[in-house]
Length: 220
Image (cartoon, rainbow, N blue to C red; front, side, top):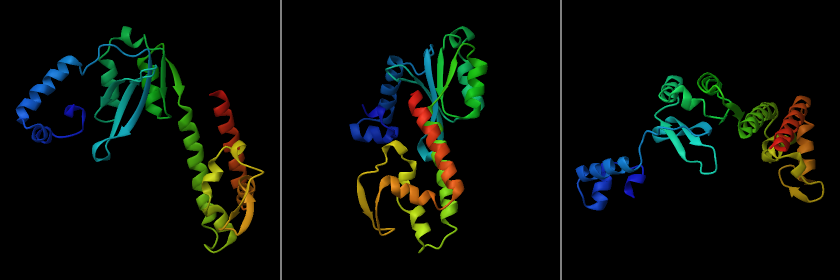
């Protein structure tokens, strides 16, 4: 059980009152039970990355069917590392893959097209929404910094910023509350409208973001 944790061999040995060499022996036995190198690829795969030890980014590939089992974790997310891993499988095995889900990383798409001839590439909708909201937030912050911190416009854009990122269909036109930052009774929909009136481009960006988000959710 201890081998499942991200800990040193010495630490595991101390906790279990055994020697590090004994821990190594158990580790070798566990490798025999669950092979580290899988001989088959999932029919439906998902590619991505995560931050591991020391904030290092690692590539991860999982089975995108119901079990979501990990296919592989690579020490980095460099293009050559990923290619070498998948090229260790024969073309007949790679041709079995039907779908590959991924974010908008450009070389993931390039690798998928080149190494998996029959796979359909699926872009994760979450990343599309994340890019939209990040871009909108960056411009909102730029507009906000044009005003004095004590001004009403600054407070409109500084506070309750999460409301701008919510689907407009979830904003209320009925339930009013007192917003202490602008010293006014408003509904969540009115609060967003007041902020958007500060800048014409901000309102245009908001409408585009909401339109795409609605389309993406509808397609899901």
